[in-house]
Image (cartoon, rainbow, N blue to C red; front, top):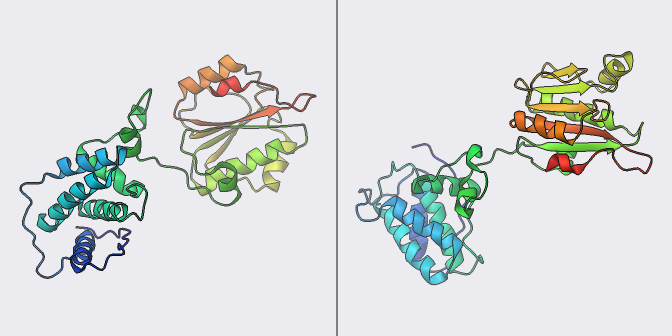
Length: 286
């Protein structure tokens, strides 16, 4: 079994047996069994049953119930085969329950990656296409998102978005909308290897736009330039519209494009009107 480090938090408890149990859990999670540790397969406590009790506890935690679940988790760890693939997750459950019982946390706390694997044990495993309409809190917690690992100023501006995302950029003429958008397009193409299409409808294939690309060093094989809308966006992860106004796209046009290309992210550049407000409607994002 591949060793995987799990965050362990020893409870402040001088009880020798409690400390020994947690040491055993850590050893099992790291696939390094302690001498004398039982490795017989568990016959009475099925993993899925224990996991479902733990998940129910997350919805309505009580310390009395947590003690019962912890007892089952510890018994499973002590009796299970060392090759059981989710031993690290059982150890993580035990530590979260111990912390909760000892009032170190207000509720049982567990890392997202462990929670995702715990749901796999219970038989719940979903992907993005199934997260529509109304889902249970357990299903949402079980889902493993893949956020873009933005850094620097991009993380400060956007956090860690998951694709597909939509961004709106607007400002007065000469305020740097295109400069900002080109820098963002280069970042996505070079740092995240995304296939980016930049539709430069406002400046088109001109020396001015060429000079802007050169000045910003926005040169990358993953960054393509167009002067008008393509037939579809199947070949692109992200598309920039510069600008929505010069492309004469209304709300219905944008909604249709979004619906037909639901796996593509969009960055929309809008011009401002005389009042300093962008020319368009936020309805296109709903």
